[in-house]
Image (tube, rainbow, N blue to C red):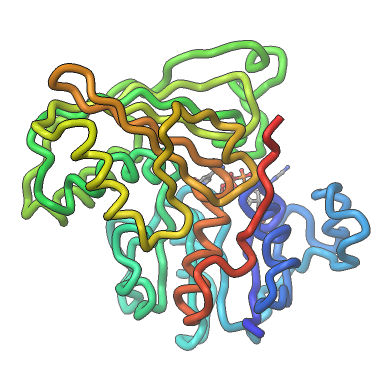
Amino acid sequence: MIKTGIIGGAGYTGGELIRLLLHHPHADLVFVQSRSQAGRLLTEIHSDLIGETAMSFSGNVEKEVDVLFLCLGHGESKKFLTENVINGKVKIIDLSQDFRLSSPPGRPFVYGMPELQRDKIAAARYIANPGCFATAIQLTHLPLSARGNLRHPLHISAITGSTGAGKRLSDTTHFSWRHGNISIYKAFEHQHLKEIREVIKQLQDGYVPEIMMLPFRGGFTRGILAAVYMQSDLSGAEAGELYKTYYQSHPFVTISGQNPDVKQVVNTNKAVLHIIKHGSELLIVSVIDNLLKGASGQAVQNMNLLFGIEETAGLNLKSVAF
Ligand SMILES: NC(=O)c1ccc[n+]([C@@H]2O[C@H](COP(=O)([O-])OP(=O)(O)OC[C@H]3O[C@@H](n4cnc5c(N)ncnc54)[C@H](OP(=O)(O)O)[C@@H]3O)[C@@H](O)[C@H]2O)c1
């Protein structure tokens, strides 16, 4: 069994990780640390876990684990690794954006997107889990950029539910504002653009096409739908073949003949893609659950790869569907 620990377990991604690890066939959840909830039962904060665990949040970092998941806010993971001595043998999977573009001294982090670099992840010790929008969006063009085939501007419209913003209440996650509402934020400058550009640069030998992204906030709790289009010489059928071939060995990505919706994937680690050719434009629609394939599910997928077990272990989940 893999001994696991969670740092920052009271938030949304921490809660999802607890749910996944408690039921993982090859993992033991040894401790869940929380600064805000130390001493309280996990079920007092994540009340859906009632009947599944009697564990309490710990105030300490317990060292006897094989892997640590960091579920901390922006800048906090960097701080955590500076302030705590973690045995070099312990693997680390960080869900924040702190190490997606650069690593701290002596800890080389690998960008944890299995559909991009499964072998590199399997050989790594430290994983920077990708952002949720970045995951949904990158899946729409990885087969093209892997062939050096992205030559035209990318146009992105992408919408996320309220859990994408974390558990702390803000004006735009307050029920009265968010429910039944929609708005654009961070147009053309969402923070995930940096990692998207970095990955394209890595695949296309320094070339990055212009990327224009309109992120939306939607009045639902979880799920991301990204619609990405660009000019392409490929026909719809050729693109379909290319995507099917690229993703055939990736268990969580499916190419659908129908326009997807978020309820197909909410509560699962799946990504569903749909391809439409309109004139010279190639449109790819992508849906994921921001807290699973966009965060904690992908983190467990990365753990499975790090420890050489079945990539899907603990991740055969049932969608909500309705
Ligand atoms: N949400 C997503 O869809 C998503 C997707 C991909 C990546 N991420 C990234 O993953 C990291 C964690 O995101 P998250 O959505 O889990 O954030 P979150 O819900 O805001 O939790 C972040 C931290 O805030 C603390 N916290 C939680 N609830 C609290 C409360 N009621 N009062 C005080 N503190 C509280 C927790 O630490 P303590 O337990 O120590 O108090 C937790 O580690 C972030 O860096 C985020 O960018 C998030």
